[in-house]
Structure formats: structure tokens, C-alpha cells
Length: 570
Image 1 (tube, rainbow, N blue to C red):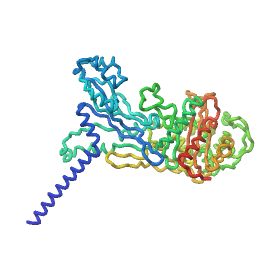
Image 2 (cartoon, rainbow, N blue to C red; image 1 turned 135 degrees about the vertical axis):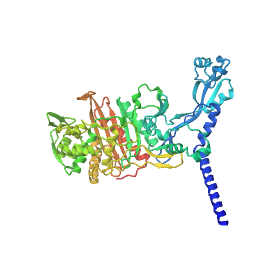
Image 3 (tube, helix red, strand yellow; image 1 turned 45 degrees about the vertical axis):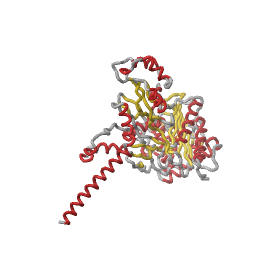
Image 4 (tube, rainbow, N blue to C red; image 1 turned 90 degrees about the horizontal axis):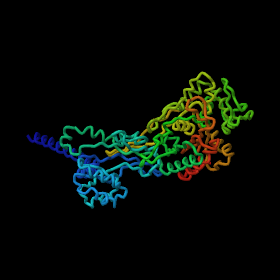
């Protein structure tokens, strides 16, 4: 009898402990996870029962010391609305409010105040807390002050193309462009019923969908370093302004990990005021969504393929006649001059097209197609930004040598800047493809943090090939670029310039007077922390990228060395 009583007591105690744990868990959800939400709902319901207060997860930049800086968040404030059915003197409303809200349109306010059939007419939104409280203190009959939240971007236009913005599409409010769109399921917050029966939720388990949604909801932390981002934006804006370009842009990436440190395009926009933009094309991130014929910055990929196959090295020679004719088409060096028997190092340093036509024929069509495909020039990179385009490399299926010769120096094939950066990073990092990305972790509302793991890239060239092409590109910078005047005695820097003709919209032929300039480099070259990519569409009054982008590249390398206190490697 005694043992049976003890058994019953244990069962009862276990049940009490189980219920207590459920209560503690529920209190944690109510007070910690949902505390702010329920406070908002209580406040808001008191003031405007039928409405829902906007809420959304935050986005953070990561500074070089690891601290998180707000990039996108919500701001608390008020909206002002009228109940015309309670207003006795419409003409006096605006004059009373105008002392606090100087921007009010009195004609509009008075017109709304006269709509006696409608109990709710909004007259002002996004009113800061102090002004809202001052209006509350006026106690004007028929004037309601309601709690409100809205999306803000504290850095204004900093990293606008990375962040995107929140806006309406029809009646649906959500992320448009950038991370706001890409991570919509994580950032969005839904309206929940705060007053569902607690015991029914526990014992009927009807809150399962809510828990699943909470598991998805959170804030995102990016790899964007705000000071570096601002520096890059100023640099590309300076390029566009100086040369009157259609577009200028750049990417700074860690070629070892794929972390994008900065990504900038000019023209840009302020996501706080995106509605004033007249040309919505400015919202698109051309670094991810558009393709270009990149020109001579593709030459190192051709050289890497030749080295990897054992067909060439820096001191391999060929006879430069200044031009090469294939399939009835003649291709020239930039100056149409021949230099006789020279090395591939000189061909790279002086960016001579003939050298790479020579390599394309040694490599062969099948191998060149294989390597350019393996470099991912025609694929998506997997970057965590929306609307990524695929490269156009169908010319590498052509039966003629001409298309392969053109591709060897970056014409006749087109790829996104982000795909170009991924391919070029393999030259810097020992020969593997990275996954470019801008999000490093998600901080979920339930309290845990998930670090995002990106796929390990496949090997596309041997490690020795990476070292060999790096030596060639260092010599490029030290000897050929600016006639060696830019050489840094303490840091090894690898680089290559690119100038490409811009194709006509018809796809047949090229403009005679428009070029795309590109430039890339990485440092410290033998153990790189950063790869820098720049491009400049249709600059005026300048012929080569070494002139339009070279000085900017040098300035960026100096900034990175000083700001990140990079140790010298020479």
C-alpha cells in the first residue's frame, strides 16, 4: 500500500513539474521573446484596436573589430489621424497642429476633417516621439495619435544596393531588392493573436505554426564593413564624376573566404527616400544582375589555363606581329604594333592581345571551354543577393577558332562582375572557387545564432598554377603598371587592367566610341586579405583603364593597408 502511494505521489509530482516547466517556457516566450511585441500590441490596441503595428528584423554591418553596426532597423513614433465625426471646428485643427508639424498641408487637413462619413483619416505619418507626445498633450477633440513603426536605414545611402528597401507591391508590404528581398522570410514579422487561450495552446499544440515561424524570424549580420564600404562608394563616385561614366562600381572581397567587405555602384539611391527616384533601374544591383564583356582582366584566366596544362609559363616566348588573322577576321594589339619575339610576361604586362590568341590556339578549343566553364563564368555564383544573372559564354560552343581567340582576351563572352570576381579569386587563393556572400550569421528571435556555412569551392587550377600566375601579376604591378612608379616596396600587389569594346544593342558589332574599363588586383599577393575589382562603363576623354581606374585602385590599396594595419610581406 505504501509503495503504491509513493508511486502515485511520484506521478503527481512529475505532472506538477511538467506543468511548471510549460509555464516557465510560456512566460519566457511572453516576456523575453515576445515582450516588445506584446507591449506594442497593448499600447497600440488601446489607441487603434483594428490596426497592426509594422515590425521587421534588423540588418547589421560588421566593423573590422567585430562589432555590429545598425544598417536597417525600425523606428518608433506616431501617426496622426482625424475622426471627423468628433470634430466641431475643422478650420481650427490645422492651425493648432501647425505649431508642431510645420510641414502640414492645411488645405488637405481641412478637407479630410470635413469627411464626416469616415471616422478615420490619416494626415501625418512617421512623427517622432517628442512631437507625437506634444500633440497628445494638446488634447484636440477628434485628433488621434497612434503608435507607429517604420523602416529606417541609419547610413542613408550606404550599401543601398546590398540592403535594398521595404516597400509596397500592390497591397503587400515587403522587401524589395537586396537583402531585404533575399531574406524576406527571416526579416518579416507577421501579426499574431496575442490573446489566444494559453491552456488551449499548450495542450492542443495549436501554436506549432507560430513556433515554426519564430524559428525562421530573426536579424541578419552582414560581412559589409561600414568604413570600407563608405570609402569604396566615395572612390567609385569620384571615378564616375571625373570621367562622366554611365556607371561605375566596385567590389572588395576576401578571396579566401568569399566574404564581401564592400560593394558599391554609382548611381545609387537612399532607401529612406526611394520613392523620389524617377528611374527605377537605379535599384538594380548591376554587380550581380547585369553582364559585361570584361576585356583584358580575363587574360590571367587564359594564362592560368595554359600554365595548368603545362603549355606555357612567364618566360614562354612567341612572335608578336601586332595582329593575328583567324577565320577572315584580324585582331590587333591596342596600338596595332608588333614587338617581335617577346615573353608571355611582357604580353601580360603590356596587355597584348596577340599573346593570348597564341595561347588560345595552344590550349585548344575544348580545353579553353573546359577551363572557362570550370571558372564559373557562365554560371550563378550562389551569392546571397536576388536576381543573379548567368554569364553568356555560348561563343565557346562555336566551331571556329575566332570566337575562342576573342574570349582569350575577354571579348565575345559576357559575365557578371560577381562571377568575374569569383573566377579571379581562384587565382589568388590557391586555385579554388569561393561562394561570394554578404551574410555571415542569422540571430533568431528564439535567442540562438546560426553562422551561415557556404559550400567549399571546387579546385579549378593547381596550387602551383595559382602561385605562378600570382608572380606574373605581381610583376605586372611592379614593372609595367605606371612604369613601375606605383610599386610598393613593403607589400606585394598583383593586378591586371582591362579595356573592352561595348557591344551594340543589336548584338552585332561594337560601338566605336564606347569602352568598358575594368581593373582588379589583390594584396598581400602571396597571402591575400583583399581582392579589389573596379569597373567603369563608357567613360569620356580617357582611353585605358590604367588611367581611369589605376589611380583609384592604388588609393584603395593604401587605404586597406592602413585601415586594416596589414603586416608587410616584403
